[in-house]
Length: 390
Image (tube, rainbow, N blue to C red; front, side, top):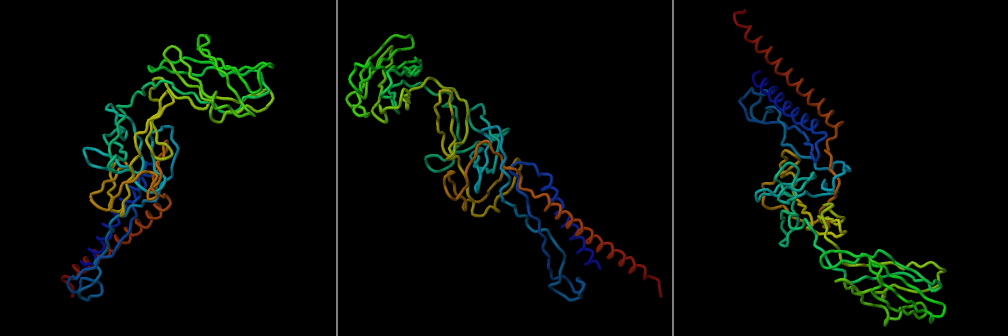
């Protein structure tokens, strides 16, 4: 009877632990990146003394129940849109790799920010986001050296599309041209032809932002195709020298009075300040500047584990891994891991209906185990009551 009581107590203990885990799952229903733990129970066998079990036989009799080691459910949670570009999540397998004090932690999702030292860190913590370094290992990334994008002088302006052969004039205004210090001037390029001009010839006039003509040139077309000898012209003004290039994809065919000629490529830029930091479509962390330039900081590191159950879930959506092997680092483009997405967060993967089902099973299991203890106690009391009878 005492054995039966201990068996019942093992059930109460196991189902209490199960209730604690189900409670933890349910209360983390809205915790970003949380992974639910599956609960399961296992029977315990022992080789207790004869009579320890209900069968009265010795050895190999059941001695109760225990909660098995918890297994994390790594099924992906719902990916939700956010309005912060440094809210990151993974569509598919893998874990973000975070570094703190030379040690790595892992996360499925996170809301990141830039700290005072320029490192991209998990909000409210010192855990730094890593990118794949030159050696193939994770390295913490800092934007400190790239807070300003330096200016670059304009050296080439390339044009494309059609200059109507039946039109007599056309112009492109507000073409920004930068000097080496990032100061810009808006040039205007005008095209004109008279009825007396040879077929296919256009006069080109370039004016600076003050309206002063700074260059003239003649473009020649043969059957709508530009003459390569006239396709390029160098223009200099006020410390700026840029080549106007009409050599590729520029034609002069009949299209009424409508010309579609446009500026296709223009290099050079002014000084730029950071306007956004995000992960692009290829999983690369990228800075966007006010001068329309971009700076790549490297591919965000994703860790792949051969046995994810070796991970230990910690507070704040983080995971720890004590092993040395069974772990590889990849960029987002590798087929073994998923894609890193900006402006996304991964919701908890807790299935509320399944948790309520487990809650009922745990409650019934605890109730039944308590009845075993109660009945065992009553039988022991009856045994003690036999004293003095007869």
